[in-house]
Image 1: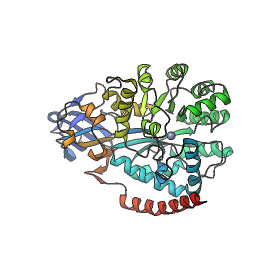
Image 2: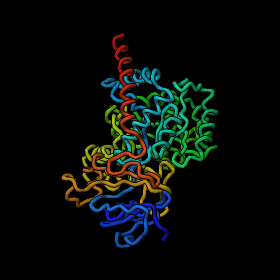
Image 3: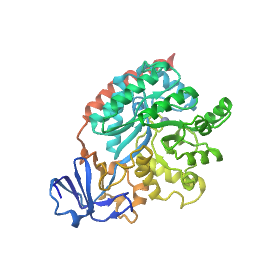
Image 4: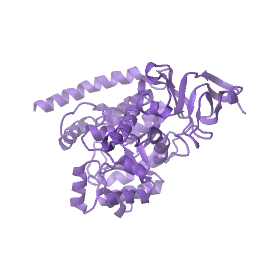
Length: 443
Ligand SMILES: [Zn+2]
């Protein structure tokens, strides 16, 4: 074998590959950003490599995929709290309109990427204004991002009018088509904020570019009721009737589905992006995930944006995804831990159209991987690996993170972002945002 760039020796390896093999004392070799060998320590020990890492006592697994978030929202985390959903959004959008710019969104994205790398996430699907800001932040940080043009039926803080959205989106998709770490998608907000014509235009744009199609669907009971009142059908039925629901469509939330909606989504081959933290914090309800799994609907996992879940931590999202279904159905064998880990790795990657590249530790896959410390009181002993990953491991246990073959965090030190500078810049901007919000409250 040709010499590897990096050889990781000795960890417990959770492959999530074809047979979901677990290697007690394993090894992984990486060359040119690609995983070139996965085996036991004995099998790979003799391999030549530029860098060999002794990872005995650690756990190696694919990096987590956060399948639904709004990275720029970290600018506003905690700014507006304790209001009903509609009033909350209205209040938040005042601050967004005032402070969202190309520069501020890039700062928010960089802050969110620091948080995600530190918690073992290596890939995210982001929907926010100025998607080029998040894309550039990701490329700069060596982070894998799915993002792209957004659609709303009003002129946004990005200065793009409704009429210009398709042409602007077209240019965006061309610009990032060849960027290895950026996977383009087209993302109308939802069926109430984007007209049927707008949804069709967005879908045509996605089709022309071969891009993923991402939207919100049935997040709250109010939204579903308003959709039925306006269009005479549920959100999923609306998407189906418009011809925009198929295997390249991903639907965030799906908390309130009719019986027919399940069949529609399953037949279309669309994936659901489940966000338990924001669904609970915003009082939206509990998504029927157990039934989705029973009906073979692919369910990926996300955190949603930092203003609605207040956290980009996928470990907490995994834990809630498991706990919620068991509590709601009073059934302790629902949503097995391995299924939850799949949602955050393989299924997440597949839903985002990256199933042949990331989400598994397997030969030929890109090297997106994380090392977890196991020599911790809460992780010793470990009888059940998947149970530990869902119910015990937390973000502070993440030691090192590699994306596309490059270490972005090594022994808890960030390699690609100046974290102190990001925090200082954010603190400065936050004091201005806070003063503006306080003035609004006094008015
Ligand atoms: Zn969302």
